[in-house]
Image 1 (cartoon, rainbow, N blue to C red):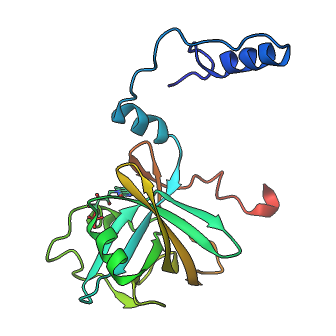
Image 2 (cartoon, rainbow, N blue to C red):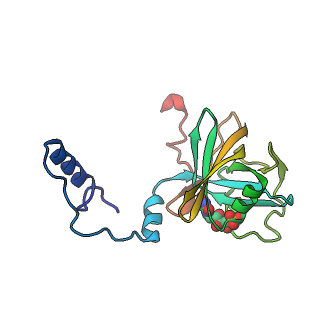
Image 3 (cartoon, rainbow, N blue to C red):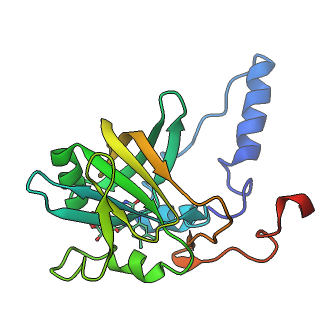
Length: 204
Ligand SMILES: Cc1cc2nc3c(=O)[nH]c(=O)nc-3n(C[C@H](O)[C@H](O)[C@H](O)COP(=O)(O)O)c2cc1C
């Protein structure tokens, strides 16, 4: 997992196998079937991929609001404008967005870690207490003070193992022009940009 190229099946092995194939020789054959990867090992490895933090919100058919902290978010396409978010099968927010057909991706700013923690717990009667919000395009809640918000219409849902890959068509966006520090997530903890990475572009 750590130390690329050290394991028998790492990049070095792949490269030499490719060279053998290019010369017309046989590809290397694995001697033992790969062991199933433990969830903890996968989580630890992917934890090195630093991400921003969002709260994905939705309104169900009964106008109830739901939200979940999510960092499995990615841009997909510019034309049409698509993004994706991966939500676990049991997610209440997933059920709401499937029912309502819309969702919003609220990107959090550096000082909103409390909000991230709040929406990382199962929904409770006070989850939305003192959380300012208003419906965006499509009706999903836009959180007041979020760094950026992307209102989406449900475009597609794909199988993603124990998660669903939800593809949204972006209807409208909202973000500041000036620099505002984002909330980050790295190796299982909230993090912030360092002074170096915050340097203005002209000095980079
Ligand atoms: C930083 C962070 C990122 C998370 N990212 C995701 C994610 O991308 N997808 C997901 O399904 N759960 C994610 N979670 C866990 C959910 O926020 C948590 O399970 C939540 O209680 C689910 O609420 P829901 O049932 O409304 O979805 C994340 C939690 C944290 C703290």
